[in-house]
Amino acid sequence: MVDTADKHLVIGAGFVGLGMAQALKAADIPYDQVDASDHIGGNWYHGVYETAHIVSSRKITQFTHFPMPEDYPDFPSAQNMRDYLNSFADHFDLLEHIELNRTVNHVRPIENNLWEVTFASGEQRIYKGVLLCNGHHWCKRFPKFEGEFNGEIIHSKDYKRPDQLRGKRVLVIGGGNSACDIAAEAARVSTKCVLSMRESIWFIPKTFAGVPVADLGKSRMPPMPAWFGRLMVYGIIRLTFGKHSDYGLPKPNHQIGDKHPTLNSEVPYYIKHGRIIPKPAVGQLKGRKVEFIDGSCDEFDLIVCATGYYVAYPFLPQELQRVEGAVVKCYNGSFLDDYRGLYYIGWEQVRGGVGSFIAAYSPLFVRYLKLQDEINVPLGFVFKEMGQQLPTNHLVDPRKMFKQFQLASAAFSRIAKRAHQVDAKYPNFSNRPLPN
Image (cartoon, rainbow, N blue to C red; front, top):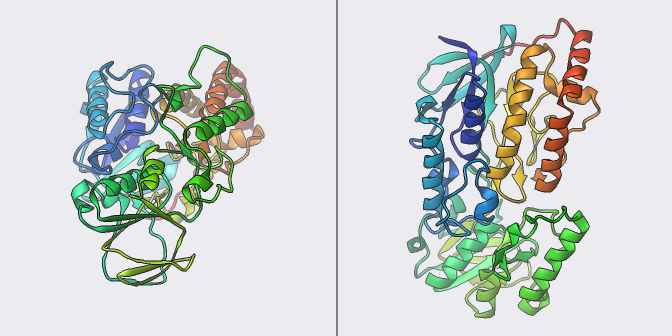
């Protein structure tokens, strides 16, 4: 067994893992980093289709301390993103710490508040702490169907190129960004495309008046109230999209911001051209036919399930499986109240760009990590004692979170003082070891 008890382990070398690793290195905190894939980049390397582009803009997706090249478009491609993440890793000399093709099979707490990590190769290592940055776009979620389909059924993660759709009768299930991207692709190359949505969505255009919608809030003016921002987006939708009834769609039964936004201008365009046929949820599969809950029925060759992903940590024991739906029940976004040294990072879905979010969070997290070294009790327990509540939603409002980061940084000495006060009450705390 390799003893690396003075180090932390970062699991994952995608956008979040690279951002956190750079912050650890800048703070001279020893760490190792592993990824199950054969290259860095996470979902941008192994998970997206060839024609994918980001839906948030370049300016808010980039790490604020490492801007994307000026010649990148407002909505960089998958290849742009891969090149950018490679440049980020090169610039900050992160590659020397990254081990690829390293699948983690098991992570468990052992004596002395340490963590035992077992790899697929059988190798075991001991770490001071583990940062879980393994992403949330890999554990495929399929819908449960009644009946059987005689054609091909794939998940959106298995879609890579337009030739998979060419000349086929395609049913896309879902209303998110991937579903709409694939439906628009099918509208161009398939013989028929039907988009099945369990409930209607708000189609937000990617640009308005030549400016990425995600950038409209990034101005030198004071931050706008949430209600005004929502009203502004409603106005943009009405001016560009019109009413849902104009497209044969029911009005969404949720407010903008209550669910992850779908930024797409092509689906409404192709609905108007008859190249995408909107349908409600699937009712039953009947061989090559699919019956929808409105009673209509169509024949298909291919069903693409763009139905999302589970937040999953398969290498953790049951006692540390804190996921409820899409929410990880941890304090302050990352910390448990009953175990120190295990950190859930990047599970939230940011309404905006992940780079700017991680760039703002990682320096604060590093300060928390150093504070954890000074106390025995888990930081999550400290936050709980300070009155923080467990999260109930996986969606993150970036404006609200950036403000919280600023407030926490400004009040860090007070947080540290409170942490030491709480720690003094529980001098004998220790992680409870779990069996292998």
